Length: 435
Image (cartoon, rainbow, N blue to C red; front, side):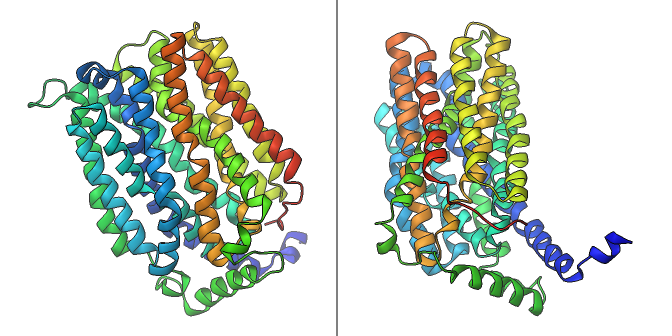
């Protein structure tokens, strides 16, 4: 009887509308980001034979892997501001098509400089996709649901790791000696083509904003638009980008994100190498084993996002995940000579790294709106993603100097723990209403 009296038909209808939106938008957005992530990090698998074929050192690879984020840095804020002006559909379509074409062109790298140039261009073309989607989701979902929604979208990190590893291993093992191309060349070509096709699908499938969603009723469209408009005009939100640049919390967010991304770049670009260093030589087996950290990372990501929304708490959820990531990376370095323990430690690190992301991206929405949201989210992301350049390069350099991955893993572990400390000390006021 009590459950019948507690039933709120209005709340049930609102929940049904947001479930409908989530089912319509998220699977396609996840699919796009899986393609982006695979095209971004497949160089980690190509490395297994590309370095020997082209005569590249580990330092050359580390610089090339990381220089992606330099292109990302320079073009990300302009891309997100352009999205706010010309719309999400055209921006996301342009980004997807261009990164696909650049990924295909990676098959024809012949020198270190062509490697650097194409990796830079890949970053420049992909710039704006992730922050663009984060911004796009703020057009549809209220703040109380964003950790959960971000977590569902960011399963694309983990799905790409789960799918990308075995897929890359399959291509690398089956395309040896096919035609006149090496297996790593086929990897870039076969994984770049789907992105080009998907870019054209964006124009047909994605609605611009809730007001353009023909699959919602007029009442549902008005409800969603009014809810977001109310939140964007709430006291304490910044909507002017120039004013926001003087706000310390924006720069603290960027620093925290820099630390978090250093871990993400590490597991993305170096997991195949870590597994190979454990004595696994078969590329298919490397691909399958590399999916394990991402499978459990997916579970951790979803749980942390849902629990953060349910408890209306952001800071501790994100900080504890980052500290767990740091401890996992330290243990990976300590156990690098023991295949089982090192893989367990790497999995723990991946769980912490991936679990931190959806909760982190619900924090900027607590103080950003309008143009400031477009520019601020992009600024946090582009500064943070400089760690994607620093971490792979430093790990490659340290491996060249020491002959071991352990030193680089310890460095990244320090960044992760620093992120947790910064969150605990400086983000005490971040709160949201319970779902």
